[in-house]
Image 1: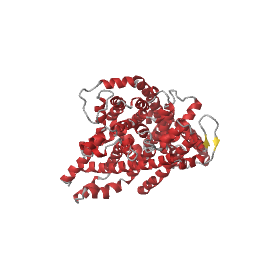
Image 2: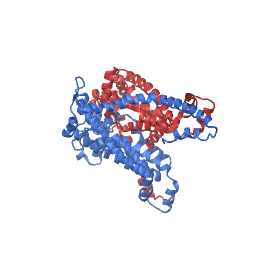
Image 3: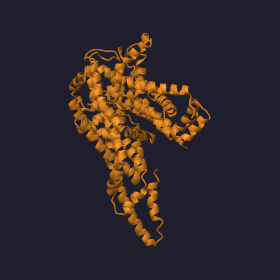
Image 4: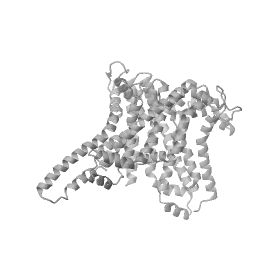
Length: 274
Length: 322
């Protein structure tokens, strides 16, 4: 390997610069969050007296307890339901290869191109007609549906690569389709299901548009939806706004650090096979 | 991928060389079983399909329906034909939002994909170990946080007393400091930088993974020949990663055209309509101005635009696969 010393330095300098570009914004809001509430500090300035209490204050002002409960409730509804139905669909399309599988796959994949804002208006009116607008079902139901293109596509990609001998052997032993699914293939699909679940949890936590349009009370929204409202109220109090922002993005960062491998694998494979 | 379903069922029938009657009875038995299995298979798809149909496909059709009507969301609808679409073309703010989205493609798609490709290849050359791994993880971080949070963070960074101006002053460019997101000429580009911040890591990691799948012998032989980074980049990395580049372009272009959260939070479309994007206009038209028809026309145009831009990229991908 012949890599010049100059290139080594230049290359690493580039990487360091890019890391700085990524990290500095986080450091800036962290430092800002420690300044006295109501002041306007400069971008990077360690405060004389760090106000750790700002985090407590933001927690109270944003009504964080209610918010966490509501967000967690939405995640706990959306993710399991989406996982079960997308795994079933992926299984039928990728492994059972039912007649029409190709058409179904195309139909779901087509959904990957639809921006949420393209169909948010009819979703709003549909919810009004059905009577779920502004209820605990308002965000989860459309969100589950909007995840289907990616989720079905992702699970199908797993099932389509499973060797068919295994299913045939089980068939010979008299297993029903449900046995085949539940006893044999779901346990084998644990890894992709877990990745998908983590990814959908983060997406749900971060979902903004649906929360904004479909639920009036910010404390009943997702975390991101509430953050938008919080910004509306405290746009002028920059330290507090920064503290609130940190509180809201911290859980996703922790989840990312813990499950980095799965998240990246899911995102990449999902994207690459698209 | 479609063919195998049928071929397995026929292959179980044909090898049977027994008497005709046996074949027939076996065939009816099998077709009955096949039909039953098909039915059960469809039951497996049904819940996902039903949800998808009700909350995605039906709304898609309704969007198209609304776009041909004048409607305030409460009263009766009036059929107006293509009038709403003409409105989108005639009102500068609406058409402008589409142009803004095109401009954002440069920032959200071309730059992150290009820079991500460069970064990945640099990592592959000078930082194959732990350092490269850390670099990848760090640049990926912004992708995982809520876009709303990204908007708020950069709203602060780009403000008068924010970090961006602080850095400019420190390097002697104090003369050009300003409230970047409030500046008619610079606001859209500033929004673009938020996009780079969010998407660079995604592109880098995608490309980096792709490079790691390239046969290392290719790189080794190039290096034994003493080829520099640029030669290696042009002759090996870019040609072999065409497919991943296509994927990355697809994902980021959709992201650019569908932007809503970042703009809503950081600029709300301002100053004036300098940073307005289709997603934001759809939201304002529909939910504050109650002009459902025009909002839907813009929504339909946005969805068509995404498909029209994606198809050539996909086709390019298919060609390189062959």
